[in-house]
Image 1: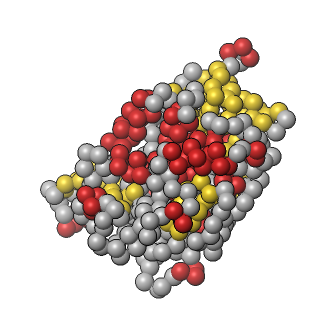
Image 2 (image 1 turned 45 degrees about the vertical axis):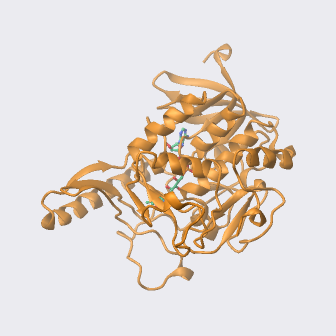
Image 3 (image 1 turned 60 degrees about the horizontal axis):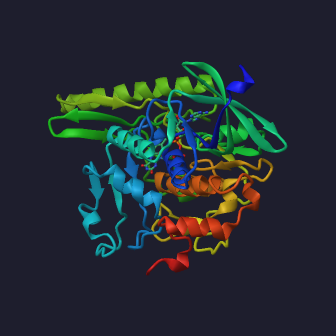
Length: 393
Ligand SMILES: Cc1cc2nc3c(=O)[nH]c(=O)nc-3n(C[C@H](O)[C@H](O)[C@H](O)COP(=O)(O)OP(=O)(O)OC[C@H]3O[C@@H](n4cnc5c(N)ncnc54)[C@H](O)[C@@H]3O)c2cc1C
């Protein structure tokens, strides 16, 4: 590999899920030269290729919107040609004047259409997208990432960028950079979400229940499909997980077909359906008990998709570790405690941290020295509400 061939960018975003899309969009809107590496050939990550297509609530469940900015923009984009389902129906027409204050406001969108629309949005904003491109390693010097090694059909190439956003979902880049990370020790249950069609249309079949922590169990939950759990970080194990997921899909569909002769499998996931793998140990670890807590360095808010009421301000310090000056993390691998991880991993939260990471990446190449009020000002100008006290209640 010739060194004079290294391609240079202001911001490199690794991973094109909801976090990466949000980060790339935010950085490009700040006028930066942005490249996004995505190993699949479509954007959206678990939210498209993984068929996890429920855009969980932007609200607290008591009628107050808490996540704004790109989280809301992508929410609206996902249903811009109609939602596959709305809970409750037609609420978007009455946003801000909701009457059903005890409902969570969620939508189900079409994954293929969202991937196309997100791609169009990024291209329009000048983001260079490199599909089929796996970031496999990197170089560092003086606590900075100086080069990213990317493998694709052209072979191996080196890229350099002023700042790097780790939106891989698995914290791959922070791991390659040698930063401290933590694993999801208990492992993930098997999931086999798929789409089928029948006479009445196109349906999402959610096979495999979400894992419920011991302390939240009510005794009525569905059992996991199988007892085996998955780390999501081992190549062989991931292939086995995918095969078991396919097996569960087939079994579920064959059973369905006994009563619904028209049911046809139409789409299966092309990315392993794994929820939590590895997260960064950041400058701060946000805990599930810190709801309604004011953080001076908040970059926006998220709600709890499992419970009505809690609102979390997200500290900027959960997105980086100062040992690697020009690396920031977004999405389902930020620095939160074990219980909050299951809350922060979902789509709206990934968009909130993605927007903040992308905006910050456009402002500095040393995150620990960033002027937080300048970042907050930019986020506010782009629609984000930073603190809970600013929500109109
Ligand atoms: C079974 C299941 C059900 C779920 N249900 C819901 C739900 O109902 N609603 C909800 O909001 N959330 C749900 N989630 C969680 C949610 O979908 C994800 O956590 C969220 O979409 C993660 O977004 P992300 O951008 O952080 O990561 P990802 O979606 O994982 O995106 C990461 C992207 O980076 C790419 N990538 C990874 N490593 C590299 C690399 N080294 N180089 C280049 N590219 C790389 C991947 O291909 C991927 O596109 C569910 C998850 C699962 C598994």
